[in-house]
Image (cartoon, rainbow, N blue to C red; front, side, top):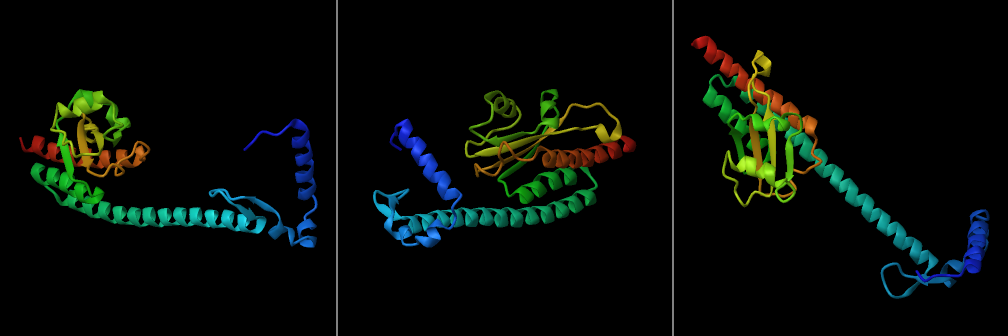
Length: 224
């Protein structure tokens, strides 16, 4: 927009304010909608006020349609995830030995989140911060130190574009003080796990996973 002098700006503001308080003006001078020409917002040509208004409305409708499509997509995806989580919990409850529990955790969550990899990493005190604040985001956004820590425990596939590392509070449900393990989920889809993904949701999964592992550990201790 080109600069205008203060006097013209004051006059234009007076005209604009007069139009605001005189809503019947364009009803009495309806032809002005077609006579007054203004620059097209996206093209190098002049259009009428009426056409400009239609352009604005069309853009707004497109944005509303986009947001509605996103809401329907995420709503449908959330419903599917919820159903998958219930099935996963049932499978977890039925598992009665360490191998079955670990298989239910990894393969079950790989299906729930539709990811290429789900792994349980051995307990390590360095995983402590990820219990309250899971590591989550696209591979290129994650801190190098965090990726290096994961790489010291498992092989990082270069095709993984997003990951989540959830700290598992092992021993909590049986009153034992243990180093946390980590549940690592990785996807080739960069948008699968994002930095703003709900930590509360991930912590719930961590609590359930840790409780299932603690249950098996308690059985093994009693068996000994």
